[in-house]
Length: 502
Image 1 (cartoon, rainbow, N blue to C red):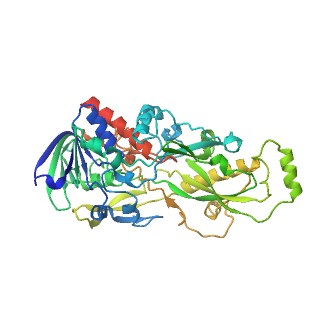
Image 2 (cartoon, rainbow, N blue to C red):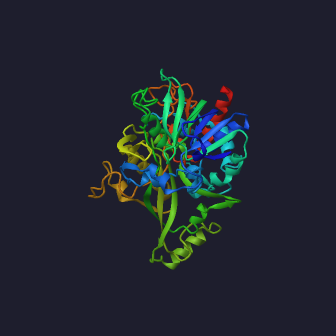
Image 3 (tube, rainbow, N blue to C red):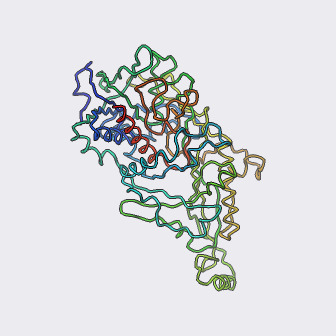
């Protein structure tokens, strides 16, 4: 059932077994999984069915680092379906090593393992329309990118718009009520602070009502989850779950930039990295370091892609070209291009950000139309992030060079770092060319101890018996993979946990 909050009587109180706040990539699968098991669910969404300027304006705030203020309200959507309304559909799973405690990486390690998500990843693939048990695609990178040093990685791309794909199912489900324009403005704890007593909601027309439930799940994204916890200070003065000043800290996003340029005379090089369409799913390959190489060199996760840039106009001597092709007869992917020209590629890197307590979401002194404090985001990339992508790119360059693929030159922002400065550049870190991935992660991180995180391995807020968080805000680390597949997998896992409590 779909309900506009304007239809609800002012100051009324709604009740449900479970209340889920946020109808996005986490909230919709979670709510429907619970409802299919027979649990009554109230799903409240702050936006409308479609995005509109008035509700989107509630996301405005202040941001610093290699981003501007616009980042906060353009990188996410406040509407039914959430940010799936404008994402590009790139999906990849986190890898086993992403869950490990890496000795060289402070604050790393999840309290659950990759194996704990295996079956949930399969189910999440169904929610995203990626298919089941078909993760390994038949895309061959042959010996160029499949060696002892390098390996193939793959994005599965399908931009599932949850608003369109699940609206009818939700609207007709007897166990689900969805209320739009229902903005949570306060999480009310009981007097002891050990459980949630109710939620206060408000429409843009200033109509108020409340919700009481047995269990509450906040699934509003990596920024808004922290904002809601920090703003509820009437019982816990630092905000809910913030006894140890962790809510909002460890903000992570994937950073993207050109890391190097590859000059190669290998023909059909991009053919080895061609996308492969399987029905509605596009398989997009890239390459990365082997996990053993990553661990040995203490690097974070980095995925590399090639982007052709230009042909050089300096042909080789024709005799050299003919000699190469006679020597490598039957291997047209070796040697110079047929006309002897070198081709230049940009090596584009998508890299993991280290979990950094100084990178954080806080509340500013500004108030939005609903009376809620606006967000202040300080996105901080540390030296370890630059050194990791630099070291990774050097290892890739060495591997490609040793096998005759081509010559690699690092971009200036990597060459000038550390004690290996090649230029006199005083370029600041991070440079302006670094782009965010618009993946908001880490602000309510998962840890077995309240001194190490905001939620426990079941995504329950430490010390609050009936409050749970869903989404990438619970990620302790991010890996190189886009977060949506893991967001949905964790949501399905949480739904099954709540079913056992019911």
